[in-house]
Length: 232
Ligand code: C5P
Image (cartoon, rainbow, N blue to C red; front, top):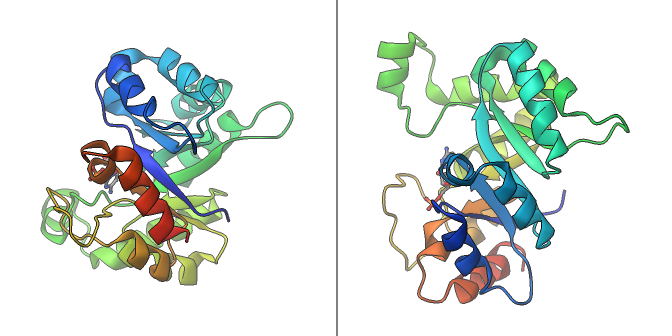
């Protein structure tokens, strides 16, 4: 599995994202496009960033009935992204339908990963509102196993969970991990953070890094630092 740093381009306009990406003259970062940018600019932004030579993780977290997700995934597959995702809570029928929709006539497809429990959900809200009474880490591992059995390629999780996900689902099951901060940086609203170096040690396959790069005074330097710490 190729380890890489994915830059979360959480901007609300094409202009902002291109001003940011124009700074990268050498290595073209793997870019995450989330709901904010996609809803602001539509599929054209995906085509434009792809045309500039970036790999793309389209982070739209689909969650609907299997037929709807299958058809939506067929559209996203036509955008030629490299990675996209669904909520594991949609259950294996939805995840299998997503895979079918995503697979192109020639058999190729982007990587498909699952969101387990959002990191904004804690034990208390899971128990009180979702009526799930098992410990959160067991729930995350169970969702990961279901995603693997449905044929998905990996999960989004905390770097702190990456080792256990690999133990449960195998080494080649991909872990994509946000919540990354430099040792001398500001954690912001992320609660459980690790450095790129620590994420590497813990076995993450891809780290997703947003503000430590996008809000840095020198984003290219911050990106290069992440790459150096995480990939070496
Ligand atoms: O700026 P920051 O590095 O916190 O950005 C992290 C990115 O990863 C954001 O785009 C955020 O939406 C995403 N993410 C996350 N935690 C999850 C899933 C996605 O921080 N559990």
